[in-house]
Length: 354
Ligand SMILES: Nc1ncnc2c1ncn2[C@@H]1O[C@H](COP(=O)(O)OP(=O)(O)OP(=O)(O)O)[C@@H](O)[C@H]1O
Ligand SMILES: [Mg+2]
Image (cartoon, rainbow, N blue to C red; front, side, top):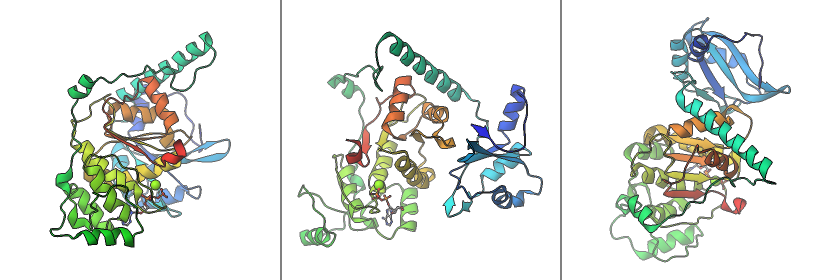
């Protein structure tokens, strides 16, 4: 990458670089229309000299959608990161700040793992003809005793709180009114927020935003919360993301905590980087209320797609990972991610991945 801007400096001392990282705030998902002035205005209340320099990422003269804001002190940078990120040209941008700087151990070990993987693939390529993606992975044989040794919980029917005395015809009417076809005849949809008890803080976020569950949510939640598999088809914008995201949160919070390098509990696969970003955005709305750690793995060339950054996040330990298959296989081959703890799997837009 080439970072635009007038500021140049020669190789700094490590301590100086670390100090600078603590004064730097990352801004991502930026529209092309963004200007220095947007950010200066946004953070104007921090004082006229708070910002030392703004640099934007460019490649071949094209804006890459992210940049860095250097503040005059670490505490100003931290304060700036606590502002609600600004909405510019209709899009809320991403603002991210790491107190300890980015030169931490997971990042270093991410580098090592990824470099080792690249070397291993090269060696294989040199010695054999061609190596397909994923070919350096050893297959995992699951034995019944392995599964017994790693118990997990998948029945959350206690969270369903059906209103008493509902008649069969009410369900029939619900399916008819929403033009729904259900292949099993024992499915009881929930008919309002009062019939389900997700985590209290999550419920608050939901009920503040949405009047009712959407039809596919009403049906999918009872099925998934009872631990059954579910295939859902519904038109665009019908709320399918939360249909699988909310039971995912319930599921993963009920399992033993994920530690460093122990991989996610919920894995959400999507066919495209755009879809991955959309799902992460839905998760982000609930991330704080649900206190979960979200990892992401997709290709591309903006800040959020930085391979080493994504790998470092995953190594630290994530409860859920949203990923496209290619990047995920890279990470699996590098040993950045394992799937031994995955007990909740989503294939979003599965038809696109077959
Ligand atoms: N219960 C609800 N009530 C109202 N809006 C909701 C509800 N649940 C989700 N939404 C909102 O509806 C929008 C579309 O949802 P979502 O992206 O999940 O659609 P989708 O079914 O996955 O569509 P697509 O097939 O295009 O991917 C989102 O902005 C989401 O926040
Ligand atoms: Mg969708």
